[in-house]
Length: 560
Image 1 (cartoon, rainbow, N blue to C red):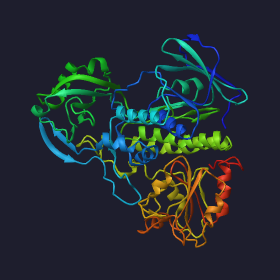
Image 2 (tube, rainbow, N blue to C red):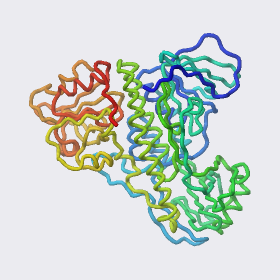
Image 3 (cartoon, helix red, strand yellow):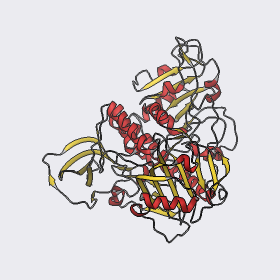
Image 4 (cartoon, one colour):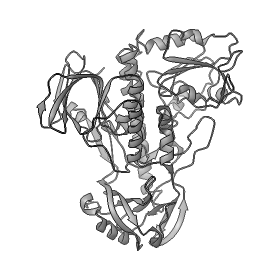
C-alpha cells in the first residue's frame, strides 16, 4: 500500500463555522457524478456505511458523456438501472454528412454489435448524461441512500498510523462538519481538488489543438431547415471548422451542437459563443441552412481535447476514480464508461475489506488493475481521435470498431487472475493476454452470459446468477456426485453462490450448450464485478482463492 507517514492537506477552500463532534462513516465519496453514484449504489447494497457529497446543487443539466457502451450496460444491469436507461435512450443514430445545404452521404458511426448468447447488450446506448445521473440518483434513493448536495470537501487528514481519514465538509449555510472515515474516494472530476491536494502527478497531453464548443440547445424550425431527428448531422468541411447537430434523446426539442474551430488561437467562451443569437449566426455561417432558431441554451462547455492519467490511483486511504484518475478525448465514448467501471471494481474490494475481513492489500489491486485498463483505453480514445482527423476527414468522424464496446477489456495479467486448468490450448498466450483476443476464455476475462433454465424450467441466465454483490461459482465439471466437487468448497461462505451446470443434479440446464461453449470444462469463480477470478479443475483451488479475498491467507504480490 502506498502510505505516507501522514497526510494533512487542504483544498484551499475557506473555512466556516465548525460543528461539534465529528460524524463517522466507513467510506466518504467526494463527487456525485456517474462514478460516485455507481460506487454509492454498490456500497449501499453491500451494507457499507458511506457519505456521498457533491459541491453543486442537484440537477446537472448537460448531455456531456452520452454513449453508454455494452460493457457498461452490463454493469447497469447488475446495479438495477439498465431498464430505466434503455427506456430513456436510444441507438446511435445514422450519420448524415452534409456539404452546405446538401445531403451527401449516410453512414453508420459505430460498428453494430452481433447479438449472441454471451452478450445481452450488443450495441451502444445513447443517453444524455443528465438523464443517466438522474437514473442513478433514483436507484440510490430506492436502496435507501442519498446524496448530500451543496456540500464541499474542503480538506482532509490521513492518520499517521494509516487508521483512517479525517475530512472537513462545508455546507451551503457555511457550517463545517468534521467526518471520520476509513477511506476517502475522490470522484470529483478532472480538476480533482483531492488529487491536487495529495500532490499526485497528473501528466496531460494535448490530443487536438483545435478548441471546441458543445451546447445543448432548445430549438425550433427543424422542418423548415430540413433537419430531421433520425440522424446525427455533420458538416466536416464547414467554413471555420467541423460542425455537428445531434438530436438529444429524452428531449424532444433539444439539439446538441458541436463546433470545432480551425483557428487554434480562438478561445470560445460559452457565455458569449453559446448565447442563442450567437449560435444562430454560427449555424448559418457553418451550414448555410435557414430556419433553425435557437431558443434557449440549457448547458454549454468549451474545451480542447486532452488525455491524462494520474501516476497512481491510491495514496494511503485515499483512492482516485473516474476523471479524477484519468481524462480522455471524447472520441470513441470511453471516458464515462471507464470511470463508472473504476467504481464497480473498487466497490466490491472495499466491501470485502470492510465486511469480510479481507487484507488491505486487496485494495492495492484496484490501482494495479484499473491503471492498466485506463492506460489502454486512453491509448484507444487518442487513436480514434487521430483517425477522426485523417480517415474521417470526409465524414467528420471515423467509424468506431467493436474495441470501443469494452467487452474485451480484461485482467488476465492482473494480481487476482488464477488460470489453473490443465490441458488448455498452447499458443501465443502472452499476445492473447495483451489483447484479450484469444477465443478460449481464461481467468481475468469478462464472464459471458448464457441463456439457461432453472430446475423448474423457468428461464434463468448466467447474468441472473451473477446479479448482486456476491461471488458466483460455476461448476461445469459435469460431476455426477451431488454436491461435489464445487459445493463443498464454499459450504461456509454465505457470500458465494454455486450453480452446477450439467451432471446428474444440475442447478441450471444448459439446453442450448451456450454456457459450455463459452466457458468449457472446469470450475469458474466469477468476481462480483463480472470477471473470472479463478478457472480451475480442483475444488481445493476454490477454497484457497476464497480464503485470499476473505482475510484468511494473503493476496499474492502484484505481478509486473
